[in-house]
Amino acid sequence: MILTGIADEAGALIDAQIKATKELGWNTIEARTVEVPGFPKGNLHDIPDEAFDVVEEKLKESGVGVYCFGSTIANWGKKIDDPFDLSEVERCIPRMQRLGTKYVRIMSYAVREAEDQMEEERFRRLREITNRFLDAGLQPVHENCMNYGGMSWQHALKLLENVPGLQWVFDTANPVFNDDRSKPAPQPKQDPWEFWTHVKKHSVHIHVKDAIWDPAKNDADYTLPGEGNGAVHRILKDALESGYDAGISIEPHLAVVFHDDSKKASDQEIYESYVNYGKALSALIGRIQDEIKGL
Image (tube, rainbow, N blue to C red; front, side):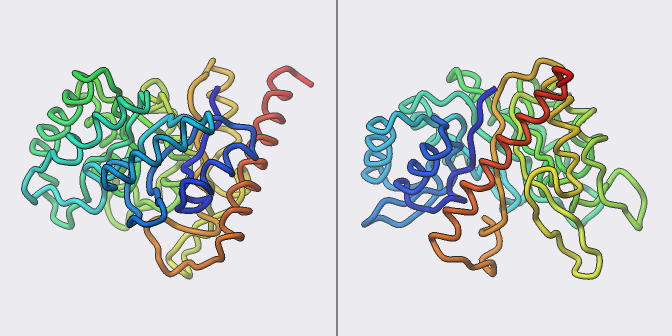
């Protein structure tokens, strides 16, 4: 088991991400947005070459590795009817190789409001993306988020069936606020445990965040791991009892939300929130391990 985290939630600066990781006693990050003084912040596969060189050097000096690239490839900000663009993939591959990173998180494009989700085009594009990474000795993992593969567990399995070689990163809280689009309107929210049981055998990475859906606000309230409706305790216990020994990555969303600029906090609050979340996850896993041992 490897504990890691989507470290831009500790701060955009690579120095803050490294510091938080070391304070937690961990030795890898899941890299998404990074910032180096003097350069604009951006995804690790998008920042200028000079900025990437600095990031690479700081990581090497600190002994912190990159377990997974949290890429923006085919994410919820990309439409399936936009022109097919592989430039992010082409930038991502050599940078992953330089950092010795095996996994890259990808998605399956934004959900269309139309009934036709253009499945065959999605599958065609994802096969091309997946094969590019596999041919380079790298492993793409798809996240159940606001994308085609996150519409329901049925959509997830159909995607995996049609994209050989693609594996899964399961996010515990995303089902809490995503509609189950396998069901007729009015669609209920998804069941995290149900979704997990269907993609479990394909899952080689786990994102831990937790949330409670508030119908009055039509939004989710994020919580510490195990305190929301993400079935975090149950899912992690099931994974560990089944011999899961791969990455478990925190994505707190408590002080900052990657796709929500309205949520504001000071740099210190962001940093402390991330570290406290990491400590809470470590404590939860410790309790689960004791339960498994019967202690």
